[in-house]
Length: 178
Length: 169
Image 1 (cartoon, one colour):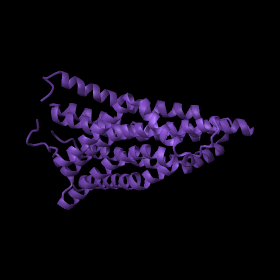
Image 2 (cartoon, chains in turn blue, red):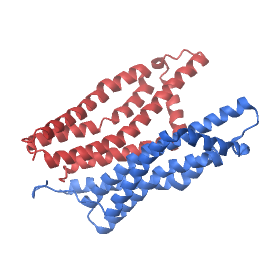
Image 3 (spheres, chains in turn orange, yellow):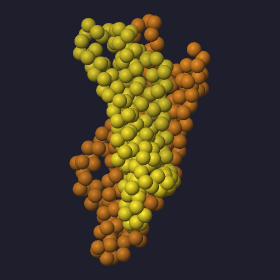
């Protein structure tokens, strides 16, 4: 499909493609599970929250507690939905940006560093939403968010952003040099 | 698969990077963003129809801040998506479109289309400066619609090329 005079894309390493496809698969399975097991997931989260009244600030007054539980369940569901959406998006971002990196980055070290940052950042970031959802019934909405933020969102999100800025600069420099 | 021109690749990667930055800003700097929007709305009181009645003004401010946050959120999701659309669609153009003129035209349309998410940044800014309705109308008329139409025209052009084997290589 490529003529000799035109530059062609190079494929990223197979492990990167496999990681991206597995993330896509996880996103699809996550989306399907959210729909198929919505009631069961909600029931599990509710049971876990009721088992930890102090964590969620439950006071034993039905009107008050139901509002708190509804709010936490809404966040639990939102975390799963955000995992589904971000995992789908980031898997494609990993494929596209690592393709650009392996094709346009010239030094082997630069290429490897960019591919590593883009892959690890892109795969790890969406998992933060899954972790947040799992932690909500156990630690509460805010503590769960803090843990997910420090363990996954900040490091992996920063890796992706740093790599994308680096890649953009690299392409811009290459354009200027031509 | 052929690679599109560097400028097209740069725009695709930049738009994705801006989308990521927008998402990070949205989650990490939400209170600061809301404070900034509230201050700008107060500074542009006549545009927002603030009356000096605290209850009414608070409701107006709340609606405008919500619209600003929605604009930033739309920017985040659309930038991630449109950067990828440009990457994959322009790769298809580079690979299958035979005519050089047609290829250039499609690159221009798709690249302009990838800038569509910037319309949501304009939307967020215009809302605080011009008021909710006027700001939304300005961004929709002058930024979102033209860039969105460019994306649609580029994709229609690519679809036509793919549907007519004589045009494709």
